[in-house]
Length: 183
Image (cartoon, rainbow, N blue to C red):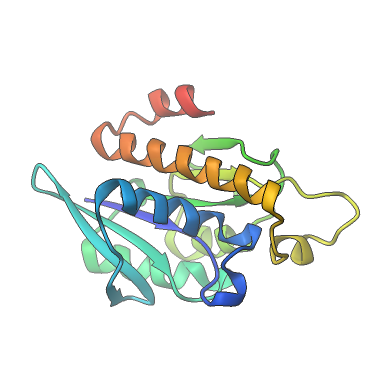
């Protein structure tokens, strides 16, 4: 069992914001897998993919970012997933725009959605997509701001690389190998 979760905020007003980098990566993964997220369960949109009989659940929580742990915890309970069976994809303002960082676990850093996940669902593997925050803009304002065309292209390219890394993770759970390739 593998649960892949992309973080973002639901609603059209958040579609092209930095905080929706996780949603972008999951959307790209779904394109690669020919999967649509049409099921509504556990406060998330989900889709299921099967690899050699193993169930892979791909999810986009439909709570606001700061409550992401609720739906993930419910999905873990429903599917019997352990912390190590989950990988969360999200934006990270502390790393350069367009870069990827994959880790087995760790702290939530400055990300409130990840803080909620750690609190409610535990320390899961994660894939962070860099959105670099300018020092002169409050973090909340920056992550919820509309992304300009140039930065959006960079963010979309990073989401495509993240989807590629996630697809590799589906077929080879060797996170160290994937970290070495994409970090």
